[in-house]
Length: 213
Image (cartoon, rainbow, N blue to C red; front, side, top):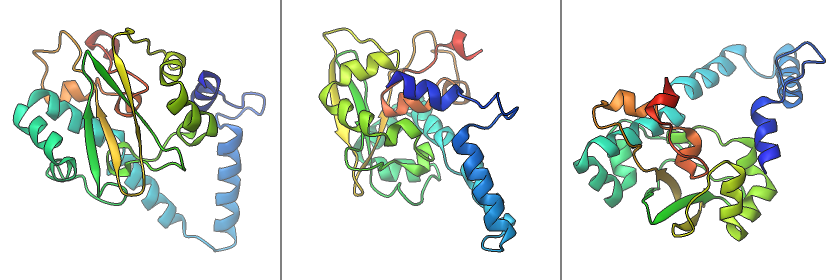
């Protein structure tokens, strides 16, 4: 698992003097071919990229988590009806219609998987990472969640229970990680900078203020 995760984030095609991975290069070649044949408009592709860079994605989720950390009223609303609470921040759209927020604590840690395919909350996390869609993650997250977490670098005390949530087309989950220590004086923007994508899936933890610098 860790090998796949590492590969996704860091394996680049230096031999070909390109910063693209093999998969990225294939996608780029396919995109060029479709544009050349007139099947897609470059402007349409640019619009899609712009959408996923600025309107949907993990930065939205990070702001949701930061507000839940800083605002007890919003946190309660998020626990009561995550879809409505997230929408109140302006984050709506496909794959975000039926959200449930789960909250990590000292005694319980939440992990999200989609055992059937790759159901994922696009509005707050963007598109799923490659490892999230892989068969090993989908099976082992259920059978050996503690082992999977360890491979992502998350080692929890044995006293912390791990609860696995299986996303479906009807319900998608957002993990609200525990607020890091030493962040009492940070505003929501600074808090959001500590929230990682992986921490909102449950395979990671938020950054410390020192690590975020």
